[in-house]
Length: 577
Image 1: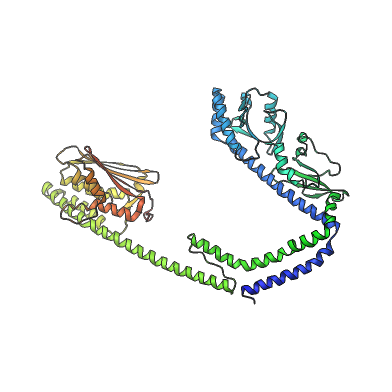
Image 2 (image 1 turned 45 degrees about the vertical axis):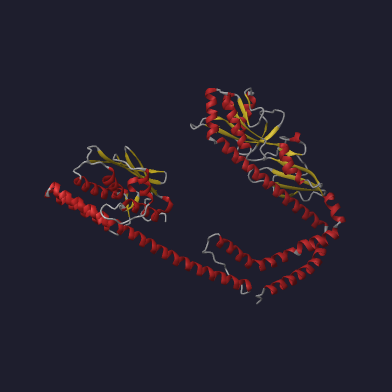
């Protein structure tokens, strides 16, 4: 078994030499006039097939453009508006729309909108933009051919002196009423010079493009467009291949396209084909077929066999450099490239292990940071809650103490519970209600809280106890409890893909310096009301969502508003970071 690259190259050279020497004898043995005719016919058929497919693809694209034009909402709207108002400006706007669709394919000569009910044709041309004096016979001819599902040959309704190949589709209103007909027109000369003239290599005696009914679509004589094609030597041209091979003097080659059903038909005099090839027979066969044709085949396959492993390795390297670290190279050989591929795969395995370990370490680090922040807010919260119960016992007596303790227990469970980092907005508001109840007792009901919660927002998940610090800040530092109209408004809604929550009070307000300190300073432990809640909210948002969430404040003499935005997730494990 040969494994080295040098051995493969040596084997390729031996194979090329052997096959070339064998081909010399075979080529000279098989040379004949019939072979030349068949090769020429097959080569020409291949060219016709290629051109025919290109023509079919272009026609298919133009057909789709016609459908898109007839389904354009703006065009329908402008046509309906013109039908009602008869304003010339609508015609100019429709002409501009048609012009945009015309530019989508260079084969399209013009695009028309024929409106029989208005006796008007709007064009994509600079002049005329529209024609409001169209004969009824022209409009009727357009309506008749519009029922066909393939391109038709029709007299140009704007320039009556020539014919065009056209796709026609009805333009209908939302109620299904036909407003007009969209025509995408292809000029005959454009078809000839792009698809027929290139097939004329000096040997063809006739080249013609026919439609399904054997009518001439394009030929050297432009005046023949639309006429039936008749050739007694080749009665059947609606097929693929070399037709009527028994005809002694002429080769006929036909190719029928799939989409349009049009047929390319070319005739070549056999004497013309053989005259040039006979003079160059030995030189052409010996050098062209020998060195260019036969030698390239084994060379190609031999070099491909040598290059394939190297190509697989380079492609894998490109994909890995693009971020696909799960890519591996398939190893089929034991040569130098095979060993290099194995080393490359082993290197990727080691990189994946390192990345997995790094991700695990980062996850543990984040969990530790979140847990530390949770413990940071809990003592602060418990301190204020215990104060609320103390003041309630002093102010209200023992008959409501049971209810207050129940609210406190539920709040305490929400604060210290580690099961579930995220809760729904509805659950968060339930916890918040308990806190507000306690604070209302503490301040003898000197403030009110109003809610405006969108139904869709209630099912979104947020970090647990994310709103309590904001409300606490409004109660302790914002509201003036000496006033009777103290109020807090809590709103939640979904805007695009974000959940937006606001907490607004009508209290004393804050200065810009106080807002800046609140949104920028780090958490600090102090005695009493430490103010760590808002800083904790900021840090938790950054840890959970990165740059996809944020907290902002707006304050004036009428009060302070806190704005919280974060992704509107319906599942609690879909946070950004």
